[in-house]
Amino acid sequence: MSESETQGTRQCVSCGIQVAGMNAARFSCPDCGETIHRCAKCRKQSNLYECPDCGFRGP
Ligand SMILES: [Zn+2]
Ligand SMILES: [Zn+2]
Image (cartoon, rainbow, N blue to C red; front, side, top):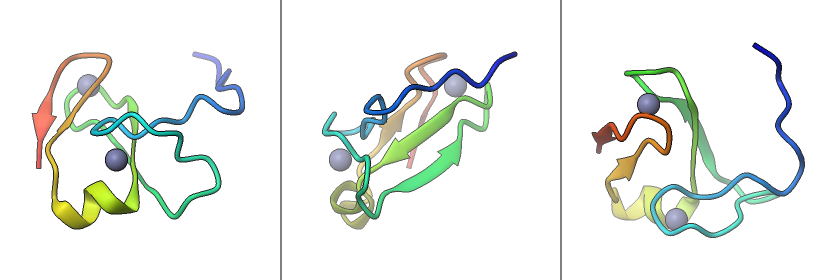
C-alpha cells in the first residue's frame, strides 16, 4: 500500500466540503481502515458518516 493522497482531496464524508486546512476530525473506518475526514460542523451535529470505500455507516 502506498500513501499517495494528493493535496486537496480531503473531503468531509458527510457534507462533501473540502476540509483541507480546517479543524476537521480524521479517523479510520472501523471496518476497512480507510481514512475518513469530517468537518467541524458535521462533527458538532453528530452527522452520520459513510465510508467511501466500504459503505460502513457510523455515528
Ligand atoms: Zn461536513
Ligand atoms: Zn470502510
